[in-house]
Image: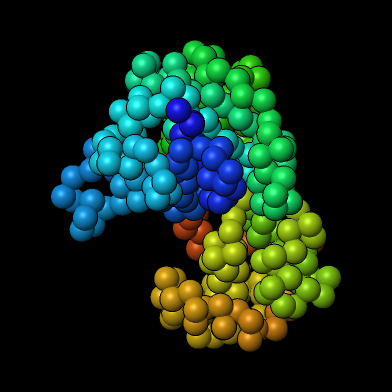
Length: 328
């Protein structure tokens, strides 16, 4: 039987030319933004479909491609039981932070299902899937390796560390052998860089956006989509917008020129928010220039309220990175 593919990236090429029987794209959660989903919510998501999934919850199978699948009639099962209908289940994940977080979540889940683990093959991609030219995806196929206890233990440790109420466990994780999941260490370092800097009170992405604005990048499209210039890769364009809101609308703003309608606009009003961002013409305030020069600490003049994994960052609980962990 053709394999089942599990991935974070929804490539249609998995189902072309008969490569896979079905593909499931696990995109229900954004682990890099906001509070972490409760464990019960995650378990319900991957478990059997119930009536609750038809009203106020998303089931893992809702992200599947089932049109030609021989097993589409069984997709109401829990994910682990569904995987047992295949001889091989391939996990395709690249090195993007969100993809690696999805991977350690899945491997931590599968650890409780040894019969399913015996079917798992891991394909780690050393470039982002979106960069693979159309038509070359299947030819550009990374090696498939068995998922062993070493991968499972590494994933479990990383998943628990990231969801901990402080970043200490993730810092300690860097002292361990993470070679079973070779794309994980760079992701942990990139995530830690998003903790507030010891000197400025802002994470790497916030600081880089201020630096870009100071260099003349006045349009939000430049900040959101010029990743090569921004040089950070954790957040998507919506989350970058929320970070920009925080830089512009606090008691002592670092940025001016952001459309005022964004102050009261709902975060899930994506269409109008996009229009407002595109209307904006940004520049630094004098305070923003001082923050960029590391002469002022943004957090001493503005409220901080965001999540880093399981850590709730506030002015009273401001874990910092310098690049060593600094307690509040």
